[in-house]
Image (cartoon, rainbow, N blue to C red; front, side, top):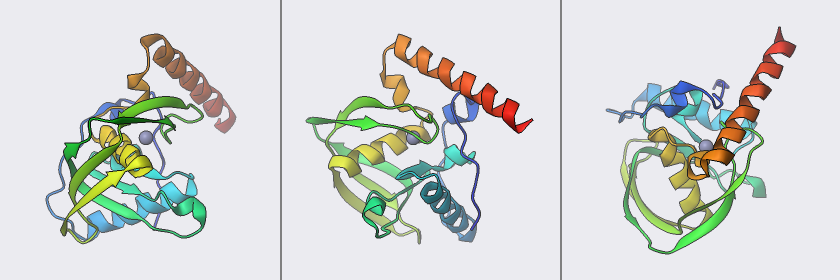
Length: 174
Ligand code: ZN
């Protein structure tokens, strides 16, 4: 397994739409292994392939990790087949939008079909934090970030801050 670099906003790749995976083969599995390791190291609870620069419809999640035991979940070509009308609000952050958090409202339940780590078709009824995380990660596959749900003013401010941070980081590295 290899740690991959996580892309941060602003970066045009993060705005790209990811394409479906044709076959879940060894290469796809090794990408998922890398993604999981990168996510744990960050640390984060979810990661989409595009965040490490691979425009494929793959996400990894582990919302239990904080409690000590690892329970990784792998979603290839996820599709939301049903969403609840009720919403819930969580304060969201994103490994590609470092240090920024905002309250985002999303449907509180969703049914998702996907292929698992072995390419087997699966379906899950997600609710609460898991439902929010899946929807957040699935947005990445469409090139959407959580800051897109904020007012234009807030979003512009965050992007400005991140651009400034990037410049500072580059100066230190050089
Ligand atoms: Zn994210």
